[in-house]
Image (cartoon, rainbow, N blue to C red; front, side):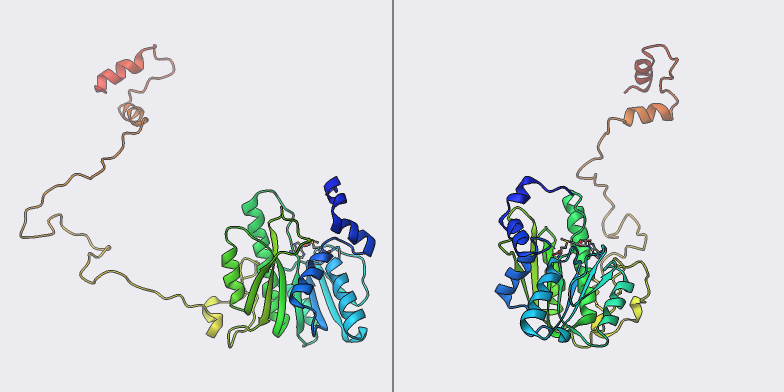
Length: 309
Ligand code: SAM
């Protein structure tokens, strides 16, 4: 996509150029860290939807150069697109909605868990807001699914979110897994943009929860039999049968005279059926009176008067 002159004037765009960040988005993660102290105690991190890599740069600089010895730090960056290498960052080129990508990330951690997962994922925006919001929400859920496989209890998850009309549904899904969920808008995120970031702290899945990639929206292999899920993995929605047992059974046929003590009295519907404009034409056709192409003009009028319409 071409860069507009507005982008060039943007202070964060200029600062990114001056400080050597690959994208102005770097400042979003830096400002989120200033507010939430995200990098405290973090030596293993996953950057989902990482290209061109400014968030991975932030992680690499902050964790490897500032906090830990570089060999203690593990950063895994994933994106559909390839990106130029970064010191200490392992790259995976893949789709985060695919089980195979999740498995590859897990393999890189060799049985250890990550302290932090970040996701700045965004689809190619179509301009159709409902579609864009839906796809973004699916990316977020894919990132959450991967997070449940790799994040340590107590760890944090940060993800881009579009504050559309269904955002509260996403918040409640995130709240199942994190004790604190905050929606944050860093100064470097344009006011005109619908984007914000959910900062989900203290990963604490429901007791007994076993991570799975069973969301059928995320991958087309339905490899989980939903009826086999147990414990907190199986969401039971209460089933409530409403209505008194003496109420009418909708599968039975009843005589018109329901009350044997009273004679049946016909009551017309309170609102009679409408008379649609095509009703005349239907009736004419039924009676084979609809004017044919070669009928002389006035045939329709004759037909109507024949029907007394
Ligand atoms: N955080 C990045 C940075 O600071 O450089 C910028 C990320 S950019 C806004 C969004 C990225 O999401 C794009 O690089 C795109 O390729 C990636 N993306 C979108 N859908 C994806 C998917 N299904 N799997 C992996 N990456 C995806």
